[in-house]
Amino acid sequence: MAAGWTPEQPGRAPAGGAQSSRTVVDAGRLWAGGLATAVIAALIAVVGIVLARGVFDVAVLAPHRAGTWGDADTVTYAVGAFVFALLATGVIHLLLLATPSPYTFFGWIMALCTLVGIISPFATTAELASQVSTAVINAFIGTAVWSLTASSAHRSSRRGWA
Image (cartoon, rainbow, N blue to C red; front, side, top):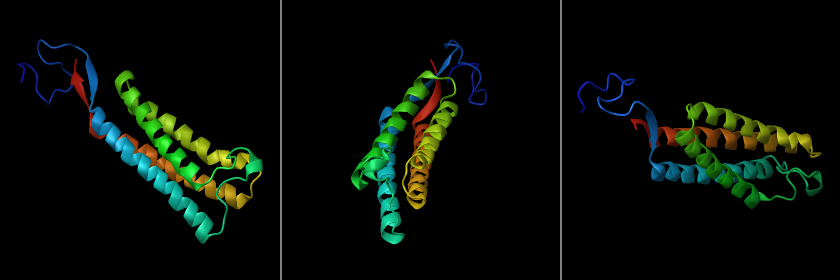
């Protein structure tokens, strides 16, 4: 350990070291977590659709003529959730490397994306039950992706001295 620096003094650079800190990201671990999150998001979509359609007999997606969701089906919805999680992983990776407060920015981005997912079904002409069921599924997907991606990022990064 360098003289003049101890772990109890996180604000000080090691003696003779650079004066700026940077985030070190274990990309393999981050993206493994992102892939696991993507699988979970896709499964949430499938479980939500099965629950809404199979148990409550409520259509989840807006009819083709409604426009916002088009003629999306269960596979499309699950793939969309999967891709959303991978995009979230890419965003947090970029934020970790390039911004001063990556988790704050990520929180805002995810909150707004989740809000769009919750509100968008209500922009269709689908029945209220369909709008609500789709909004609830989107809320679960957004919340899961947000929390799991942030958790993976915390465990895959650390502050280091440049």
